[in-house]
Length: 385
Image (cartoon, rainbow, N blue to C red; front, side, top):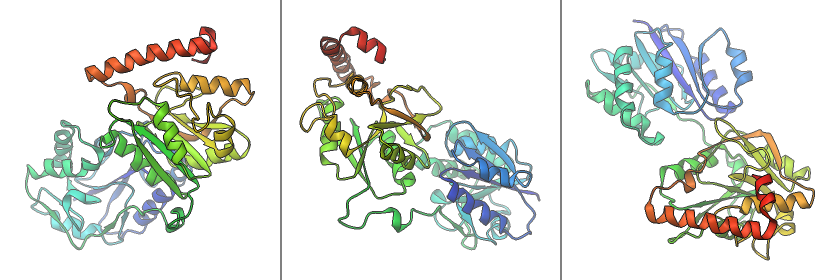
C-alpha cells in the first residue's frame, strides 16, 4: 500500500524549515513520497530551491486555505493512502507507521488528540478526495477547516485518533517576541472595525499575532453604533498607542510573514509614512492607506489638529487623500516598501449591504467629497486618486 504525505505550508520560512527538517528525519519505512503544497506563502523560494527534486511541489498563487490546498495536492499524490499534515506542523520521526497500521478497516485516522483539532490525518486517497469535495460545499472559517473535513470523513465511518502517532503544532513565537509585563511595545497596531466578532476581523488579528515578531500591542477600536466613520476611531486608537511606531490597518488586511521589519526600516531611514505592497489584488502605488506605518515624529509633525492625526472633518472617505496631499506639500510623500507584503479584501470594510448603514455611508461619502473639494479643489482629489 503506497503512501503520500501531503504537507500544507503556510506561515513563515522558519516554520516551513522546521517542518521540512522533521519530514527529512522520518524513518525510511513505511515507504512514502512527500508532496508540498505552498498555500500562497511569501519568502520560501530559497527553501524550495534546496528541496527541488526530493519532493513534489504544488504552489498556489494566493492563500485559499486548507481544503483548497488539499484538493490541489491530491491531484499530485500517487499514494493509495494520503496523510495530510497541516500548517507546517512538525511530525515525530516515527509518526507514520502507527497511523497507517490503525487505518486498516477505518475511514480515517488522526494523530493524537481530538480529531477535529488534529495536525495530521490519514485516509485512502479516494475517500479523502470525496470528503474534501463535500467539505468545500459549505464554506467555513479557516479555523474550522479541519473539523469540517473530519465531519465529512465521518460520513463514511468513524474517525479515530491514534495516540502513538505524534505531531507537534507549529511553534508559537518565542518569549523574546513578546513584551515583558508593563514594557512599552515597539509597534502599536490600530484596527478600526464595525464588528469585532466577525471572522474577517479574527483572521486579521490572527495573522498579526502569528507574523509580528517584535513586542507589539493591538488596539481594536469599535466604530460605534451609529458608526463614527474612519477618522475618529483611527485618531482615538493613535491617541491610545504606546509604541515607538504605529500602524493603521483596515480590518480586512492579512499581513504576510516578515511584513513589519521593512516598514520599520523605511521609517528609520526618514520616511514619514511607509506602506506595504498589496499582492493578489488591487494596489495603489501613491498611497495604499488600508495599511500604513508612521513614527511618533510623524504623528506630531503631520497631525491635522491637536490629538487628531487624520482630518476629522472627513469621516468615511478622503482622509487618506488629505494626508497624502499634506505630505506631498511638505515634499515628503509616503514610501511604498515592496519587501513588506499584505493581502487586502478591498473595500470589504465599507461594502455592507445593510440598507440603513449603506445609506449612511453613501451620504457621508458625498459630504466628504464636497468638504475635500472645498478645502483643496477638485483637481487635487482627481490627481491623488
